[in-house]
Amino acid sequence: MISTASGAGRGHAAVAATTALVVAALVVAMRPGAAADITDQRGRIVAVATPAQRVVFLPMPAPSTYMAIDRSAAHVAGMNPASASAMRSGILGRIFPAFDRIPTGITRGAGVIPNVEAVMALHPDAVLQWASFGDEPIAMLDRAGLTVLGLRYGGQDEVAGAILMMGKLAGQEARAAEIVDRQRERRETLAAALAGVGDADKPRVLHLSRASDSFAVAGRESYLDVVITTAGGRNAAAEIGGSRTVTLEQVLTWNPDVILLGNFDTAMPADLYGDPRLQSLAAVKARRVYKVPLGGYRWDPPSHESALTWTWLAGLLHPDRIGIDLRADMRAWYEFLYGHALAEAEIDGILHARQNGGSAGYARFVTAR
Image (cartoon, rainbow, N blue to C red; front, side, top):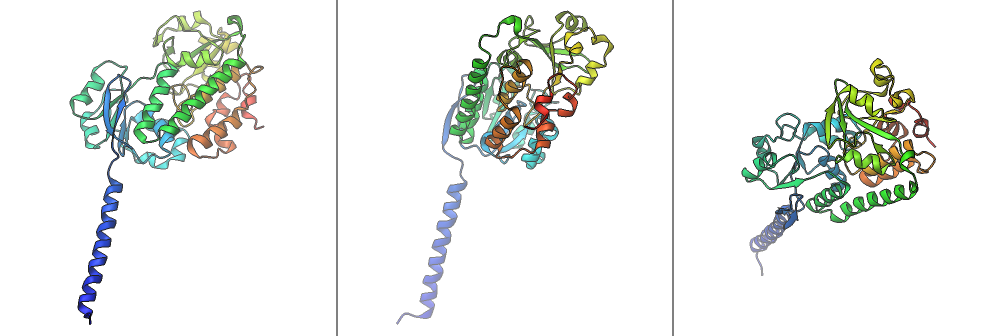
């Protein structure tokens, strides 16, 4: 006969064994993934445990792109304060409300110089940093022994490469590839629609990244040049390289047909329409000044939403050739990127419908179809 005591002992042993197996399974599940070799945009091969659990982002557009790829804000361990500002002003803060708890004190100011001690305190699996602002901003992190991936946002090929790199880091390579493919398909669609448009029929477009207290413009070799040319325009500031501050006299000399106001400044179309210094500009006379939309991120820098930027601007520059319903297109993209169903009021907010409402041709975007 088996005693009650020995049976209880075996029962306890079985429970203990089962518990040990469960604990072991949980430990395995919580371990970072196997190390993956990721080639960053410096051309350096970096070994990173993927999917990364804690990533710090110094480039401003990158965290919102990573959230769209990862479908979550849970793995963003730190970000540039300017990224948080865009999320707070735009819609992404409502889609991912946890963003407001993500630390932002990782830079010296809101620029590219890292606060290395603050970054290290976040214990990141990987840190993304610009590789296009000189050697020192990224070397500071390398010297600290952090796992650093360099990013470059210049032409669309570099943007696509950055998205694919983030997809590998997140363990979401197929999803990142789909974002890149959809953007490529949109560029091809717009190129076909604009085929045959001669230079004389391409409006001269000037992007002002700051217009409240100075005039900073985007020239050639900037991403805004990609946006303008993709949408069937000519960059009025193409004679200068990159982005720089110019004089009022230079803006008057360029005399653009269309002015785009960026989202790193508070200036709105009404400010330019009411500025006595600018009344001779063709864009002001024709009321073709537009505030660039602010969605999951600002639409003027490159991001996962760039296809919407191209479509928006192409519709303003060539409404007779672009048959895409922007509002329906936004709903489809936001469902794909974020699983979010945009309300009509949210679309109006993204498009700055009220602020742009007095500008020529904007009614086609504001009126729901």
